[in-house]
Image (cartoon, rainbow over all chains, first blue to last red; front, side, top):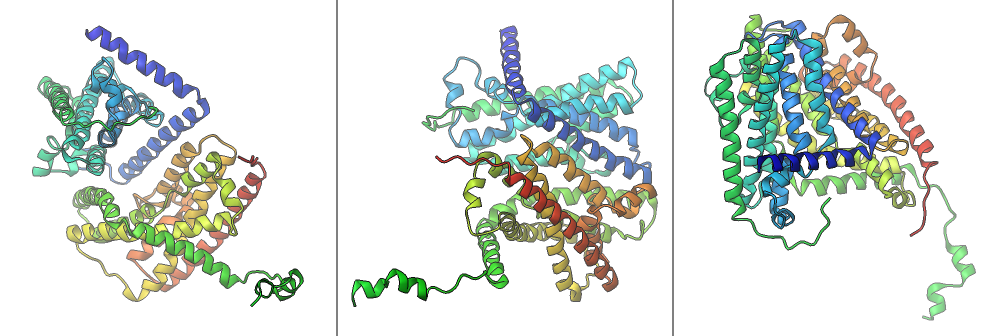
Length: 262
Length: 290
């Protein structure tokens, strides 16, 4: 069962990437554009830490790891599962009919149905930044990969929950976008600048802490309790996402649309 | 009254028609002002939606305040490169307001060039670039109002106000309009590259972020290392972001005059590039009926 689904996911991704490669120049421009965009954010932080070397215990290396992890996990989620960002619109416009009529799980099918080449640039940039700017050992690479995949799972779960609000609110595109943007924004800054109850919020309602700060902490010095905490958060967010999506799907009303799916 | 007298003979119509003359500059300006006004009104109609989209700015400003509050505390200083904390935050309000008040003209131009809508625009009695500029101004003013309103309110609640020179408001408004025109020429030039490339979004992403960094959007140029500051001095981005934002928080008449002069020169150069790209690009257009 699991193997069949994995084969289905990879077949879909392969087909989507092959379709994107049909417009090779566009794909390359978009991927490079995003990489350069990320580079310039890193330039900002280099400038900042050149002037102020330590901010609440965070150094330039920490921020470089943060951006490596952030770009990689966000690139995987938005690059490979871009439909998650379109979820509210698909729900409101009744465009889930296509997936309902097919035998595969609606959520899995929906997630893999679209890629976004722009964000694949992020997915390439993350590891590239790490390799070129951070001192690495075999164990650090393993920690990076494991923590980043877990943080991608948290991000994906959060996006599915945010997008599924449209089932209950009847709209929710703006709310989903604001929640997503808030998470990405908080996650791209050093944890040291936030404290108190805000930090609690950033490990629960808007899980920026799990998306970037824990991976950075684990790269600084690995601790099993933190790693297991991150794994538990990934399982909790993905599990909750599946439950919320399924509960929402029961409220879904068909759009009776006759349209080409692009 | 006979039908003939109503319409007149062909010859009498020719005789009564005023001699062809160039439309005056004033009438041309009215035409584009009208485009700007209509765009402004149509965007204003969705003000609630625009404000909702600006909630994100509250988060951005909140994070900036946290970052700079921590930094000022760590440095143990009231001023960093001449900026107090409120001045730094209001500088960032100004840079965000400038950047967030720029409509996506590059995307519109790409869409029209590649989708073929350009053909419909070319036979209209207006300049293609000036039409888009007028719409850019109209939409931009609504975006500016919401960005400045939301960003300013957040900054005021978090760090308080600063010593704003109200008497300089008309000059600052003029400087904003020139700043906006500079950004228009920069974005439109990138959009016009669609005549030659499949997709300009990647190029735009890169050049826009170069503008952000070297224009001092996230960090005032005063905090740059000397070599980078020197590079920023000779590029137009300083006049597009840092100059107007600095003047907003620390106004002086000589600095305003100097900025307007520098902006004027860059505007001339970028406008020429824009017009040249448009003229070269239009030559490549094949229009088929249908």
